[in-house]
Length: 138
Image (cartoon, rainbow, N blue to C red):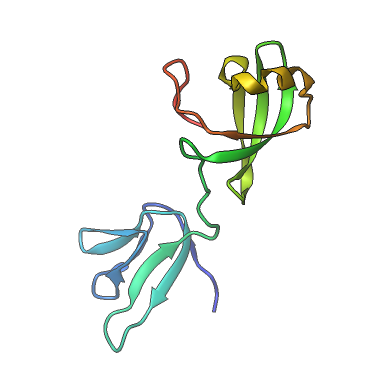
């Protein structure tokens, strides 16, 4: 059986041919895709098949406020270090996120270690609450 890919807004079938499932919506008596992904039709005991769209990849894990993250330092200057977030907790990320560690945000007992950071050094820290100066996005 061939895999059929679909894009958001693509008409998948009429309501007489299938009922809407996850990743779909109904408009004017037709089922449309609301996600980009693979079309999946599942039949249930003689009733209409459920039409749904599933993504190929798992959803990306995002760091929450207070999450313990493991980072790799990419660059450093006197005020902050730029990092790539590689793990959230013990879960590796598929794609790294960029982040910044400001010198002011480092715990007082750890400030003496900041000058020893260098590019490609590993850092374990807690994801802080976004400040008003930041965009609030990762």
